[in-house]
Amino acid sequence: MVGSARTILFAIFSLLVFVPAVPVAYAGELTWHFRSEHQYAVSLEFYSDDHVWPGNDEVYVIRDYEQHDYSLACRSGEKICYGAWVRNNTSSYWGSGYNGAEACDSCCFRCDGGDTPVIVLNR
Image (tube, one colour):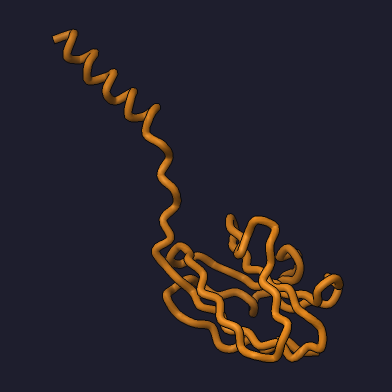
């Protein structure tokens, strides 16, 4: 009996130690729609409490007056905010701005499988 208890404990311990951590599952999606009417190129990022899109020190860039759509894989119910700014001029911004540093309630949406209205960046 003692041997089988040790075997079971060893099996449980092995599972805890050797099974890699399961990554966060992104079951939801939120599609954002933007159009810039600004004369200069605009940088754009999306922020939640623990994630940034596109991530890896990259940004989306809008260089024209066309509508641009961004579908983000996210956790269902996750609050996501956008921050946009004139390239190379972080003092001219929309939403939560550069690095999500500005307070903004109207620039956030929940990940619910839906779409945002078209957000027009102008000034």
